[in-house]
Length: 223
Image (cartoon, rainbow, N blue to C red; front, side, top):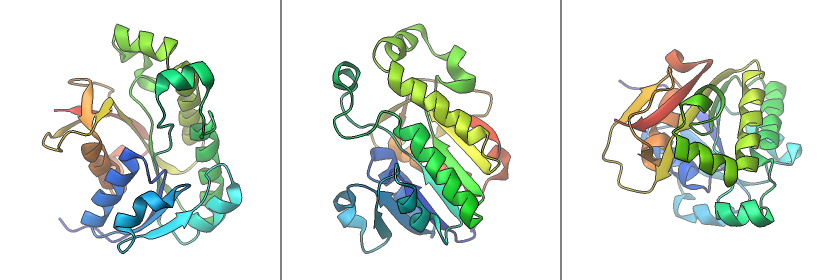
C-alpha cells in the first residue's frame, strides 16, 4: 500500500540505527533531513537527503532543523565502548544526550506545531524493565547504569510530551543482514535478544504512519 510522502527529521542520524532509518525512509519515498554533529559520515547519502550539522544539546540548532517537518525520529545515544564510558565517562557525548536532546526536540516540535514523534530507546527500561533476563539486568546495572538511567528519563520526557509519540524498544542491535522479520509487541514480549539495526530502522519508518502504536512503547525482537 502506498504511503503519503512526509518530511521527516532524523536526530542522531550518523549512528547505526539512524542510518538504517534514513535508508528505510528513502525506500518509502519520504523527504529526509539528517541532523547530527558529524555529518561528514553521511556523504554517501548526501545527494538524496538534506543534511543539517548541529548538536541536539543546543536548542537553536534543533529549532531550525524541526521547522517545516511533518515528523521527527530520535535515535540518540552514545556509540563509544560501554566499559570505557562506565569507567571514564563519554569522551565526546554528554551522558544525558538521550533525555536532554529529546527534551530539546520536543520543545522545538511544540514551537513549530509538529505532532508525530518516534523515539528509539531500549528493551529493559520503562514498561519492560522487569522483563529483562537476569544476565542482561546485571549488565545494565554494572556497566550501563548511567546510560540506562538517562534512557529512563528520556522515556518519561516522551510520555509527558503531549505529542503523538511512539517509543520503540529494540533488544540487542546487530549489523547482520536484514533477513529476519521483526516480532513487534506492544505488550513488551520478545522472542530473542538480537535484532538487526536495519530491521529496527524499517520499524521506525513504518511507525510514522501506523496509528496502532501511538501513545505506546513497542518491544522489537527477531521473529
